[in-house]
Length: 160
Image (cartoon, rainbow, N blue to C red; front, side, top):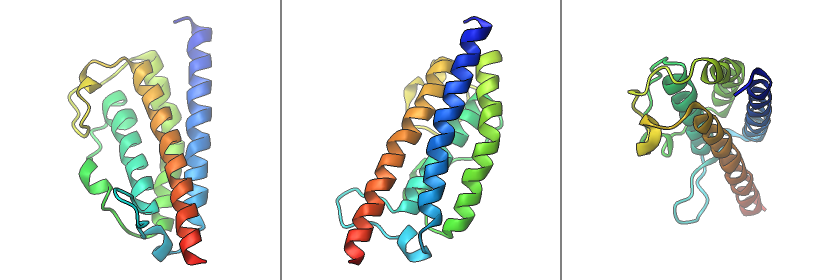
């Protein structure tokens, strides 16, 4: 990858991931504690708080632990049962917004620092390329943003 190509990948990943993080935070910040911690009446649904907690855990794992080698503890299963103060979780999203550009740069300049980090059920974490990991982060954030939007809409409909 040339310097220009790496620059373009950096700009794209940071911009798209940041857009998703901003929207995740905005949606969650408008919710009360009760709304953020309510699970819609659908099989396999998650609360808004759990969805955003999963996004934080996923990004910390792929970006922070694997790519940057920071060994950020993760309990993936617990993310889906998480509940708490939505404003504190918004602060965690802001932390990610500040850290992610550094992690993207590491991926594109150094590669993956720690392939032994634990915290996923994917077997390809040990072999995936740094670019694959970045695209995975973007995809997961986008996917779960859509899930959060639908969950918010379902909960709003239930309130009316």
